[in-house]
Amino acid sequence: MVDTQEAFQEATDAGLEPREPGSKDHLVRVTPSEVSGRRFVITPPSR
Image (cartoon, rainbow, N blue to C red):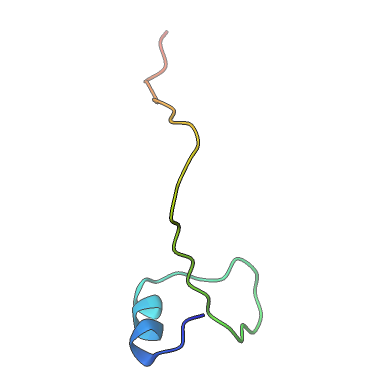
């Protein structure tokens, strides 16, 4: 949970907005320790 004024200001300055409208009572920061998945190389379409 974001619990300091500095962290709250940093989150606000990031310009992120909630996905759904309405009042939001909590701001949560998620810090990943590991990222996995696939990497896709995007190439221009050929004719």
